[in-house]
Picture 1 (cartoon, one colour):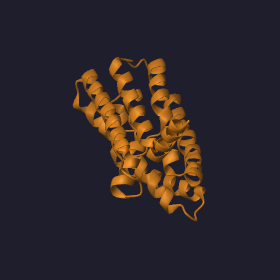
Picture 2 (cartoon, rainbow, N blue to C red):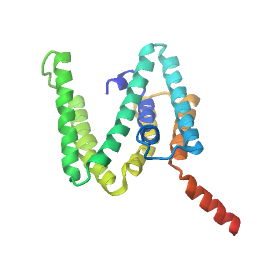
Picture 3 (tube, rainbow, N blue to C red):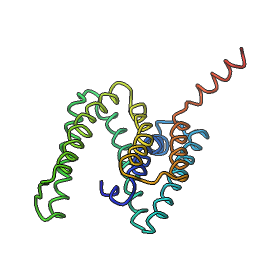
Length: 220
């Protein structure tokens, strides 16, 4: 949320979609639960290349280092998102998904209040309808309902497959930013978004399945 103050919403959506890339790095390099293949390394490099292009775009638009700090903050959030998904998949064995979702949201609220109160000098309630609607939308739909659905997917499909919902983030986020916020749609935004999406697709490919399909095609 803090990082999004300094960058376009479309760029934030694309960086948020990088969760599968961070998930692969965590699973392959740290947890050793996923094989690190040439194909997946290539996907990570492609995705981060697109992210670097988007970061340079934000800096060029604003000529302010805060744009780069904002992109790094959103990237850190995506990395935390990946770590949380992997940990949830491991820890929710024998636990109901509602318990995991409730624990995540309750402690997130506690940490947010602990940081917000000293920063704002006390409790400041919004009075304009716009911020109120935004808080309710993000809190009820974007957090409460979304977390129930997210942990349902983790429980039944696994963290990697659940993370594939981030395919939708770049397309929807960029489109909404351009249509409703008047954000600039330029070549670097399109190319950077495309590279991130391509990187996510590549790291999601199963090398063994590609070999089997290729062998099947040759046999025909």
